Image (tube, rainbow, N blue to C red):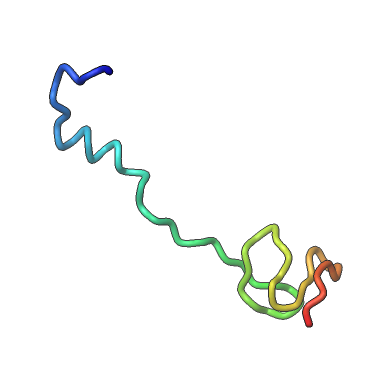
Length: 58
């Protein structure tokens, strides 16, 4: 198994972890019911997508 020849500095270690932070989900407003929803997905509240009813919400 390979071993590192040189110690990684704090800067290089932290730069490698720069993309590990949690990201806030991008939410948009449903044009049908005005609920918050993920973009490019069917609305979980009313079941519509692009003006069509695609989910049956009971």
